[in-house]
Image (cartoon, rainbow, N blue to C red; front, side, top):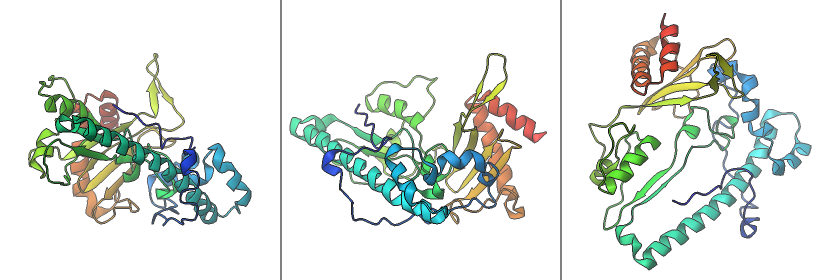
Length: 304
């Protein structure tokens, strides 16, 4: 296992990459200047301040503040360019070193029986919705990379099934020919990897819970800085709940086919209510399946 700290903060690239992309002007995300109108984050805006690009507290970006005008669009665009520049300088370092590892496997002959899996512990926002961070359930923080290279001759393919980091342990055991314990949460990806096509027997939705709250010994909820978020994602839709934020709960629901940037909250839309009912049921069932008792209790309370 090889764990890179980069491109985590602090954004200090290798000296050889210090001036990489120096003259590059990067295309902006379409929702860089999102103002959250009509969506739950507008109701928890004070909690979003620390997630906004223009409010980041990384030391190497503080010099940009002297050029801030107070105009959100101007200031966000200013810091976005420098932020992405440093981020990608660090990604270049990762790219080089993954290449070194793959070269070694080939030169040593280990590539003949080695499965290589490239992934990450979380996604990240690089200006999408004006954010730099990870815990929001919007796609940019929710998605993680997953690339699998099998030994031998395998045609390249892309699978669109919904998978999770929970699947890593059973996948590694299965690929190594070891039985998977029955209490392991997650499913082996081996059938998906070898079949090179979506599986009709695979999961239809994925459960998400960001623990922004902790339960004290006296059984009272203690608010953290970030706040709690839980929800459900299918291949085409998403349901998000901010259960204890200020005067919450606040809900969001998105049509990921027609609104991939997640700009239109359909939670209160009359035409969306049948699908919403189904999403709620799936969310409740998955919270129960994973024995997430606190969320089951929250949902029971909200349904009363």
